Image 1 (cartoon, rainbow, N blue to C red):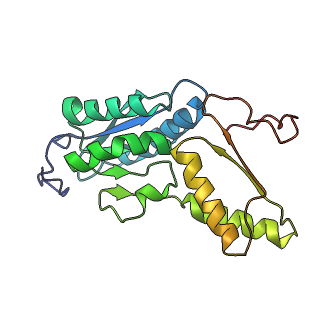
Image 2: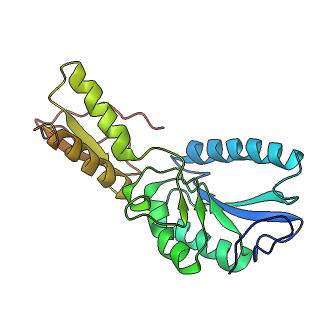
Length: 214
């Protein structure tokens, strides 16, 4: 499928005058709904501005979106529909590491680009994938900065609470590596499930404070 976008040029299904069709799968319901809703609202603001100025080579950007509730199986199903039924030109702004991980085999099989996913996971960075267009820092880069900040202010006993999925394990790996570079290791590691309101209990039996969701 040819995807060269230019004035009057062919770009395959999902990119025929007068529009460019892109697909967004994200959580619009459930505990992580605010992430998906805010990302979609921000994207609409930008696309509306671009379309008001004539679009991209005269084509208007049209975004279709489906709710995956931050569940990998739903994200994969939505991706199949975007590619097979909607025949989108590109996928855009998927929110979440486990959901992107589930969709990635379909993306690679169909050779459909994924633009600006809201995840800093290494699986979208190493090895380099020409179909993935990242615009944010990786989790490993963010954690490196966090560890450096904590150590600057004398905080050397660092525990890690991580989400028990691809997102959390990626962060855990980043934390371990950042600490190991300084001859340190986490004093404690514990998990929290995606649908769990509080992490596992601390050693000794007393609970952790409830986490803040973002």
